[in-house]
Image 1 (tube, rainbow, N blue to C red):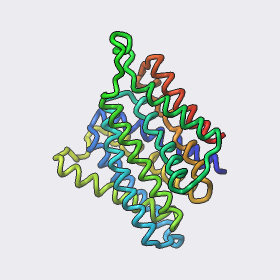
Image 2 (image 1 turned 90 degrees about the horizontal axis):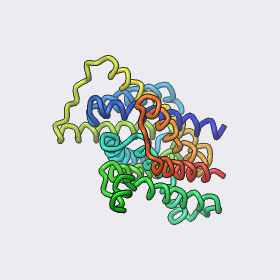
Image 3 (image 1 turned 180 degrees about the vertical axis):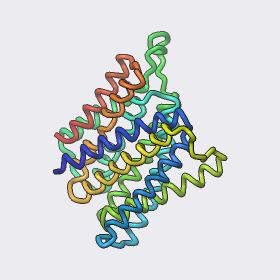
Amino acid sequence: MILLYAFISMFGWGIGDFFGATLARKVGVIRSLFWSYLIGLVLSSLIVIVFINSIQLSIVGAVYAIVGGFFHIVGSIMFFKGFKTSKIGIVSTITSLYSLVIVIFGVFVFKESLSESQWVAILLALVGVTVLSFDIHKLSSNLKVDFGGKGIFFSIITMFAWSTAWILFREAVRESSWILPQFVFNLLSFLVLVIYGKASKADLSLPKDKKMILLIFSDAVFTLIGLVSYSIGIMNFYTSIITPFSSSYPIVTTLLGRIFYKEKLHLLKYIGITLVIAGVIVLNL
């Protein structure tokens, strides 16, 4: 059962990210996020209505969810900006390292003990990120490392923002239940996005292209499926097991990008992605 929740969230987030990347390139980051989050909020509200008798109210849990929602939307904005300046597989893989940050946080704050396999996973992931930061063309010409690429920069910000968000969300779910926190999480994320969109004078109009509308709806649905599955999983099982599997979503996103966008990655990038994915998987050994 534990793997069921993990894999549902993995496929939900992986497919959602692929749709999100397509939308970011077609209609813009803020515009696509606005409508995706709005639909997600509506669906999240329906979940609350359906399970209203099972809601457990908790002020502490609500605060955790609110702050977590803020960090999550900041990470989401950076995430889609990364998609516009780098390849899907690279951005998704680096951002998936939030699971490693959560593990490290658990060791030094929650005083959790790590097994040898978890330490190996951390090392694999860190090496993978370093390899992903290399530009193969510049490396071959002048042996310089490209650590200044915007896609890499946005991805690292996303990684830390999301890790903070999920650490707080974990506490919110355990303080109450998965129902209310996921609603508060989505509500605050949407409100912050509205404020940001207005401040940046972004175009928030609904795209007229029916295909784009379908993509927005699909993005919202699959992302929410990932969130709900992850929420139920960390409420009932060990976060250290659920998180590594659910964060393997770059496998799904990368495969979809390869199939539909025909993205070609250099060998060095394949090695980096492989190392990171291997690190995520080893976390569960």
